[in-house]
Length: 244
Length: 374
Image (cartoon, rainbow over all chains, first blue to last red; front, side, top):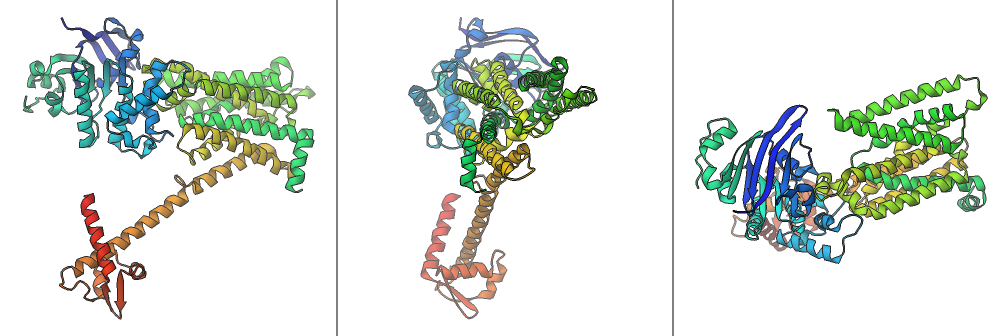
């Protein structure tokens, strides 16, 4: 049987007594490119944040490669939503990407030549090397997104969680991100992406999870990405004909 | 008193030397820490902490009966810390936003402090006078041991900043991400906040409860205008804070009846104002100049392009046309025309104009350039 990269058991999250995620069980096999889809307020970002321990769930557990998440952090990389930080922060693109090395460095130790080399390589992968000294507020939205992606790539993790990496980016960036995703899949990495654009799901991903507070369905795109699950998730009669 | 004489006095006169050193060290450490408060969008935190320290001072006096600075400052530190943790508690445990939490803690603690102060002043004990100096600060009461204490805290703060520099930076920029990397963000947060509380408490004697937050914010806000690097910003804020201390002390000690704390704050505010207007990248002045220049350039280019469009339909591109036609073009102005003439792109004969070879060349280049950009 294939290895399970991420296993979520009975995960429940509530803001102010109102459940945002209800009793989620999820198994993500190693090496899949998975999209999490669902309407606004379905708890997609919350699911990712709860898995990563940024939000405290009121119940449930998460294991990474069959071990508790806390002991497995170095295998997991996170690409937050672009809008979650202040881009007027006084720092450069390279410096932000270097932050990806902080986890492996641990407390107090400063990044050195080796970390810088890794950061530059990641910048090159996302096509942003020529912007390395650019103040981050001078970058376009798509470029900022690519910087975040590079920061996660530096971590050289086995599992990547990305929160809406395609949101508000131009075609160049979308292509750049897709190429990175494909490369990650080739290297047998597991990638979980909070995704909004249903049209591109069959093209970009091979695994999908339908979420609307509860888990509606999870599995291979070719088996479960159909009008039935879309209707269950979005609550309206979903009649988008999607080419497979 | 001239500057030379004053600077001699700074080194020889005990009181002046103590105050100058004290305000400089204070300005340095608050400027440094203020950078972190400003970047975390917690600018009002300093204000809340300093106001929250007041009941601690009053209670310390009521309990010990002593007016020793160190005893009172320990009281201030404790109640400042309590206030800070209340703010944290309110924001994490309730739906209230941090500005509401800050405002609540600030007013409740300050109100309680004022109540205690008036109660103390009504006491028959003659010892009670002088506690109100903590409201507005009195730099003249600084003694050498106070300066030593400030220096030790500043040294400690520098050490911690250097050790945990990358942790502080990542916490400031992206707290959630720092958490996923395995850093204990709560610890880093408490560490930096504790130092901010400590620095504020140390400044109460000099600048006072009411104005203390300016010491935290002004140097940092000014420094942010000049740099895009966190390290440079922290360093610059420390230098600006220290200079505000030195200059503020100098101004207040050479003029009669100017109290030191407010003058220091005013000097720091002048730094802020100057930086907002004159900093080359973020300053208002240069931004306005760039705006006007861009607009002029654009007008100039548009006028030339318009003229070129008129002449390109004719066999002879240098054929003269009436100036009146140009009135149909919105961007046309006499000034623009003069600019074109002075660049030798256009010559004017009476009421007629025609493009020069240079003008035609410039216009075609511009046209091709625009096509390429699209």
